[in-house]
Length: 538
Image (cartoon, rainbow, N blue to C red; front, side, top):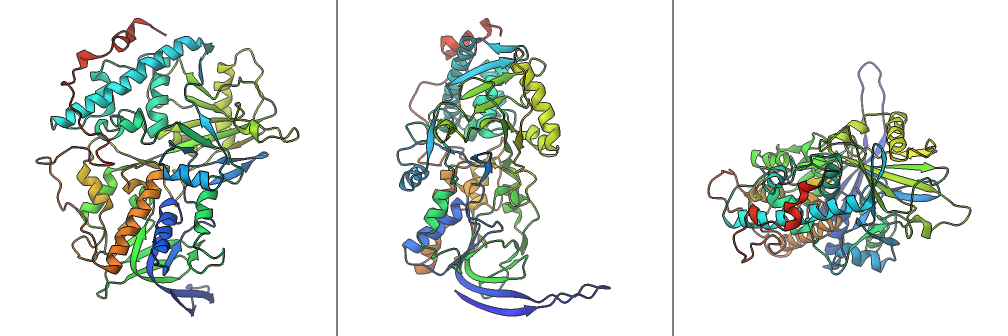
């Protein structure tokens, strides 16, 4: 990579100010836009294969992307990604093991239930949870059967109704929220059956042996920073450009080179670009592409959803709740899908922060998660207003307890953050696999040697997951290596997507939603537990 410096002058009318700065021009083989999981894994793969002429650019002051943490009391809490979804061959689990990341098992069965009158009998809640788990398993079979018949996708809400499930009590609504909204960050009304709730990821997961919750004081992004240190010499390595916001990406040049401009007047000239910007950024006007993105690319970007998943942390002067991991709050006055403060987590549960606490470092931390439109609403509120709302809920959950006001509150605001515009992606009703092909397709798509390659969790077969971002970064780097050393692999894209002739079979991850040879599924063939679900009113 070659760097040249020059003086840059800015003239402002009326007030003449001459600004002299060290604007630089960088020339590199591969420019990697974003230092999150996809960017770091892509650079790692390039380095492993001997391609060391790359430049990583990120607007933040640290490596991690949406994997970031913040000190809270004596602890460190994860603002974004927090879970390792499965072990086995999960690459994130392997990284965590390699670098000694501190985690604890996450058990969604360790849950208690509350409504506006206080605690709900745990057995009642567990019975409803068991029923809905069966419904979720039936949804997978239902989706597979419909795919095998080439039937159109449905909203998850329609599928639930077809399976005779309705969230017609507050507790049912809370149980459904925990299984769907809390996972996808969107309600059943807008989520796809075929590619969201109807996939086996929602029931058994991609990787085995349970999920882990990160509690490491060094932060989840420690594993990404350690991986980067394997090929970056130190923080001063000139192949890492932090605090640098990309503003323009120009791929119109006849010489095939891509010219990138930044907010601090740097110019980066690259043979190839790996763009790992979040879906939310690509949907916004933060970065200008020259020429503008083609219609088929914009249609794909706008068809996919960027969700908002907001974890609210509160620190109290003492623990007034039990030792459970999770609690569900069923608001008796609300049964709609988007109903606020439903899922609570106890970060003082056995095995969580209690593992790390010295006797003079006691913190009492509750976390409540909000999603979708309620998360966007809460992001617009002041912290004091959020506390006021939460205090009302806590007083209902614990009617016989004097609830102290939190000593401190921490509210990440992902939707309003211009560097992300949300938390992670989700597949909505109406989006086809051809749209996802177009989401991933490089530019110029008609070229035998495309220059801009799109990567990250939204482009991944495992969209929405950190391990998806990591593996997609590696896959994109492999394609760039093919381009450099031989010829670029052919990337499928669709100039026009119609409703006829498309094969809706799920093609990601070795057809993880592949049709199995089972008898035709019928909603009348549900298990007895599901057919009895309306016999109990909670």
